[in-house]
Image (tube, rainbow over all chains, first blue to last red; front, side, top):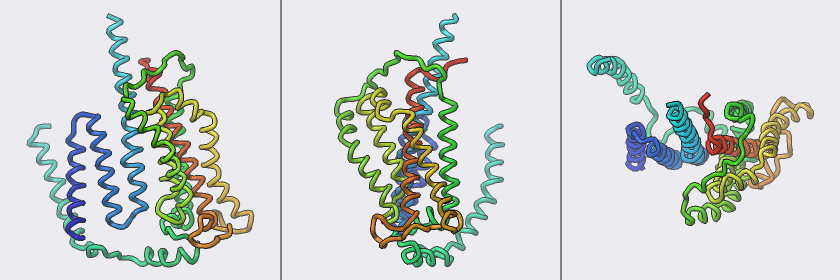
Length: 89
Length: 245
């Protein structure tokens, strides 16, 4: 019990580090989603199924979805800006 | 800032933090133990007082219902903010979306999962007082079920199913129902957000009085809010939002 919990906490630390170190934005969102899932497993392991369920829906689904949509919009804006700039020339 | 300077600043902050952290960790309760009387008291009382087998929901929607009311209106206000910022005053037409380039397998899988996910979301919403779950989690699950329609089909059918004015009305209804449930306690002469409805049998779906009503209203609000949010974003991206002004 103690060993499994420690391993789980260690895995969370490692995957959190990986999220920060990933440079490609799309890969980073997937890493963030995985990190949320591991966090949910941790909550479930420590007997908090309610929090685990919230963590799954927010950390592994809703948050990556929102970040992905926001980044898609920003890339869209950059593309439009480049196009209007090349038209001016 | 040079690399050496940065290292010095890091050490200046990291070393005191490490000392304080280790001192705090030394005083932690042993593995699996819980200090403090409140949690034990409330988990032994909630079944008798509120006929709720899920203590977390009893705290969320009853004992600390006022905090959750504030949280719900935070979500409501942020969804409104995104919609105000991204709303196009004169939407363009004729920007059909380009099929997203997804394989048939993915589309079929999404369509197959839609019904299952929707039922699961409703189950989580309505059984919050019995098993882990509740309005918030169920609402997000329902919203993601509708996102699968966008993956399986396109934005047009997503829009047809989650028609905009209806979703807005549902979101407002969900947010309002919570406050109305709270105010309704005043009509029977009890304080705001008192659980005045009949409590029923513990373990029954229709039990625990206002907790079930509030959980359902939160589920409605969260589901409609997330659908509106994703719809606003998607429409904005596909119709070429983020114009250079």
